[in-house]
Amino acid sequence: MLTLLSMFYYICLRRRSRSGTRGEALSSRRAVESGQRATLPISVEVEQYAKEVLDFSSHYGSENSMSYTMWNLAGMPNVYPSSGDFTQTAVFRAYGTWWEQCASAPLPFRRTPKAFHSQDYIELAFEEPVYPTAVEVLETYHPGAIVQIMACSLNPFSQNPPTDIRWEVLWAEEPTKVLTPQARQFSPSIKQLSFPTNLIRVEVNSSLLKYYTELDAVVLRGQKDRPILSLYKMPRIDICDLSDSDEDLSDPGHINLGNGYFDKLPYELIQLIVSHLTLPDLCRLTQTCKLLHQHCCDPLQYIQLSLQPYWARLSDTSLGHLQGRCTLLQRLNLSWTGNRGALTLTGFSSFMNACGGSLVCLELSCCHFLSEPCLEVISQTCPGLQELNLSSCDRLHPQAFTHISKLTQLRRLVLYRTKIEQTAMLSILTFCIELRHLNLGSCVMIEDYDVVASMLAVRCRSLRSLDLWRCRNLTERGLAELAAGCRLLEELDLGWCSTLQSSSGCFQHLARNLPCLRKLFLTANRTVCDSDIEELAANCPALQHLDILGTRMVSSSSLRKLLQACPKLLLLDVSFCSQVDARIVQELCGLFPNVAIKKSFTQ
Image 1 (tube, rainbow, N blue to C red):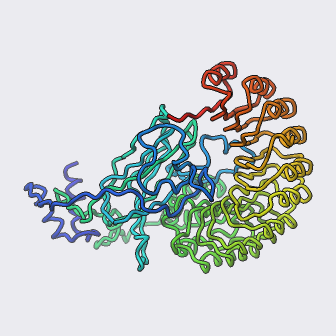
Image 2: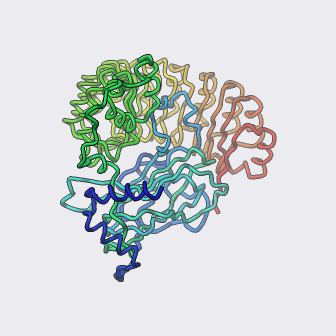
Image 3: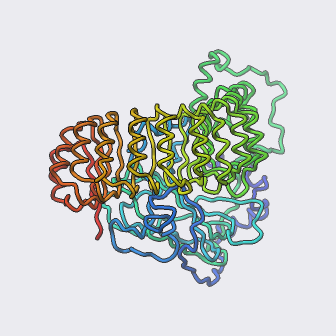
């Protein structure tokens, strides 16, 4: 064993490593062996709170207020060390697995790496670039969602951004289930960076949480000067450097025996084996031999492709390398990719022209490289597209959305937090009559949701799910037309639609006309009353998710009737319902143990 280690060390020293020559390596080794230590300079640690929120994937709040929005993460804490549900915190849009269970949820992509857990993110800019020594996140309610913290080499306030932008992982871990909802200061041990940073990205996964996680502030600690390690490390030698040997290791008398047992396996079986590899492993395997190169480049391996886990490294060049393999591509996930110039119109257009002909699903959430010409390319190259997700593409010009109307086969369209206007929306509904799932949550540029609801009732009678979260001006007239025309609706989100009034009978009419209803969110509608709940109990036996947060007029007796009449109910949110206290919730939980009854609190 000692001989083998000695040989390996000898070979390593013969190669030029990325950080030093053989002479430097030997010098550093002697320094280690003799215990020589470098003198550490005195450096003051800088502590700073986030100056600005640059980007995020979703939030619970409105685009026109500060309550529950990601913008609350800028500056000093508002709530910490208090615990509970506070409007001054940052809250993401979803939690748990409820949304994944809905009919509107997209199918998962194959080949998603097991190490990729992120569902949401937020990017924060700080005043001064530092070499980080700590990142602290103040979590004030249901902590445990954070799965990754990253740092970027780009200074977002610089007038001359670098051409090469690097992202480095400071810390990453699997989702954890924290038993208590109480506040905490989360400060994981982070790796040391080789560059200063003032751009931090926090990624979360809320699937294990029992309720919405709430974040109050983020602290970046670090030194302005690059810290010197007290003990000089051996130069790192990349294993790839060892392949470039000075000696010719090939045997002139060697006889090529082919590919061994792989030559005896059926082509389909090798394809099945290869299909279990992640995309990076697939690309590495192409370099091993001609046979596996053929299998790994087979277009059948690229029927569906998720590039979201590799958003930090994806570029025009990456798409160019994949282009020849994706001629049969049907499902493509580019969410989070291409920002800050990583993807361009030229690179995206080239890929879509070569690979978009068979696409049926295209995920483009938070893709800020998108422009009107990009959507025009999609409309021209993807005639059979059935699913399009433009969630949080909030920098797209309103005029760009008119091109979507050319995608007449669309069945699922997500426009959450976009600037689509009413004219473009009505044009889409005129031509895309096959729509099954439509998300217009937080689309604040639509002037009259009653007109949109009326058009849906006339043109999209097969609609299964509709998200109108925080739409500003839907009235009982538009809701009545929607319920009359879209009788197959299974999911309806009317959360924070304050213009709807129970006294008009709109919610009772809704319950009578939508017998297939499985999810109904009436969040923060103060007028929901016992009659509405009893009507749901009488007419919607398939109901699974109901959110009536914030109502003052619902009693425990009507909730009991609902729970008895809806045996499939899984989620009931009665937070801030003044007539339903913690004692009643505890009693109902005991009687109906299969239902997750939510009751948030404020300390």
